[in-house]
Image 1: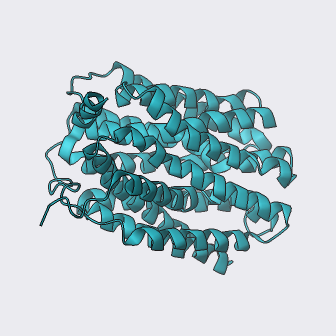
Image 2: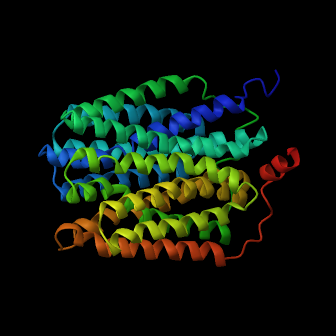
Length: 398
């Protein structure tokens, strides 16, 4: 049999990647952010409890990434299982009103989201490169922003219609179930796409460890606005018709940024795009610490939303550039560092003994500083690895 007979072509593969990341990250990871102020308003949760639920999700994300790194399941199977779990766990948030159950659901949703990010990235990026379509990765990672926009609009409509947050959780869980069912069959393992050594390899080199540490800095730096942006906006203006727009703006910036950057920076090394995006992110994270207004929060939404998926995309591409066949292992290590960086984020806000928006100021300053350090590590480290083979092929094709 022709070894390419089971290969998925670039267009359906990219669509699978978009849908998978929209569900797992846009919903499984980030639907909680726009729904947090609605859950607070409904009287079912405090800000401290919201921080605990966020931290549980980040801990689960860490555990999922570590499992991928150590166990090395096949990427397409990892993504499939994760997508089904995201659907079930998201819907479960709408079927319970017990805080302990919510903690367990958010933890497991974090595990599932990590499975999908690592699995989809390790499955679709080599497939696109094999077909001279690596620049399409911008469309794939735009799926996260699309999922964030959808989750944000669902939360906005829920607030405007004065529906309970449980309705939003159930609706989003249903959407994720539809996606899981749609991608299950076409997400197959192809001999030409999944090299057998994909989850193996020797010790990570200096460039790989620098990528891991910088990605961990990114995890800490972005998580404050990614968790509390709508909640901070609600403290300023409690009208959901106003504060509810911060998250869709965040998602729209994320969806458009990966497509634009993959075209405008297509000849640049991934680490250069990564460092530039992280610098812009640090400015957006710092802005609310200088002045906490709706305008600065929207500015932060654009800067952080417009760069966090660019960093994710460029980071996964850098993993392929540095590690070659061992890229899935490095992707998992980077995702674990990212998740580890996220863990202290919610507590830097909820454990500080300040009131109102003052509690956010030291957290934003610290997050911005860590982002800058990560960007500098990328810029000033050695970059002596050969150019990625897939990018070279794509340039030859053009």
